Length: 174
Image (cartoon, rainbow, N blue to C red; front, side):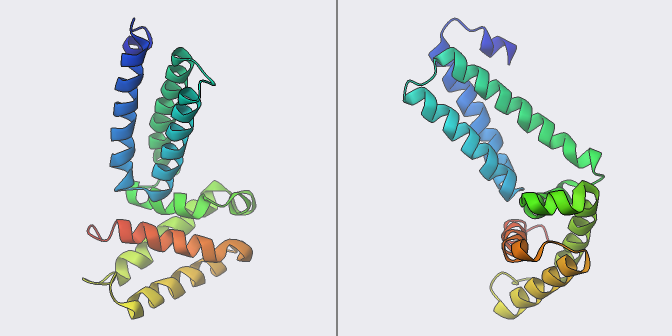
């Protein structure tokens, strides 16, 4: 990052950094739906500001370096919460709701994420993404788990959909 930051040709440095970040985001797209969307939006916003001449090349490089540090920091969150990478993806799907995060806290959401992951892993059959009956059972189980732990009712539908989308993303590995 320091080499890119001090490159004499800022446009070249910007394109290189953009490519590196795009590749990192693509890797996350296969693993963590919520994180990949978040980082993709951040990258898009920074590039859009630059293209609209709201910030200079040096400033956009600083923003992209900050984004790269955020990506690195997000990788370490799983260790702090004692979650594996796949469980962390479900944690992110549940923690995408600020009110749930405020009410339940990180530790409780981590417990819910582990239970949701185990439930989905146990119910995922060979072609579960195609069978509506299996999807309905997963949806029901996720709602029960959310109710059990007191997940805010106003956001349960969105959280359930996020969890199912995340599960579909990981369908091959389940």
